[in-house]
Length: 109
Image 1 (cartoon, rainbow, N blue to C red):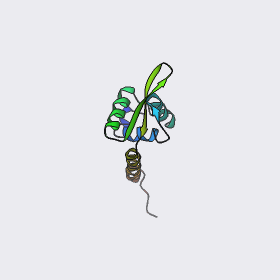
Image 2 (image 1 turned 135 degrees about the horizontal axis):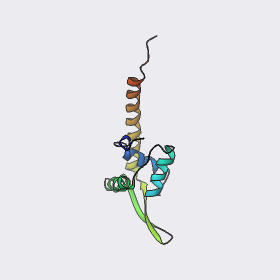
Image 3 (image 1 turned 180 degrees about the horizontal axis):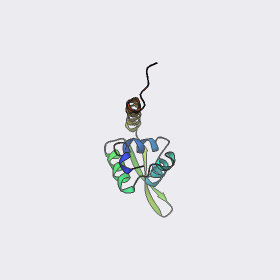
C-alpha cells in the first residue's frame, strides 16, 4: 500500500495502537503493521515526530523506561486521547460509508 494512503490517518493509527496499553515507538510501529497484515508500513521518521506532536497536544503522555542497558520512551493514551480516538473512528466510519456509496452504488429494485 502506498505511503500516501496513511497520510491524514496517522494520528488515528497511532492512537488505536495504544488503546490496548502503553508501548514504546517500535512496538507501536509493529502493532500497526501486524494489525494491517503488513499492508501498512510506518517509517520511524514519520512516527516519532507524530508521537511527540500528539504528546504536545495532550493526547498522549510518555515516560522513560529502562530496557536492559537501554532506555526507551513509553507512550500511553490520555483521557483526551481516548476521546480523540473515538472521534477519529466516527469520522472514519462516516468517510468510508460515503466513499462506499459512490464506489458501490446500490441499484434501485
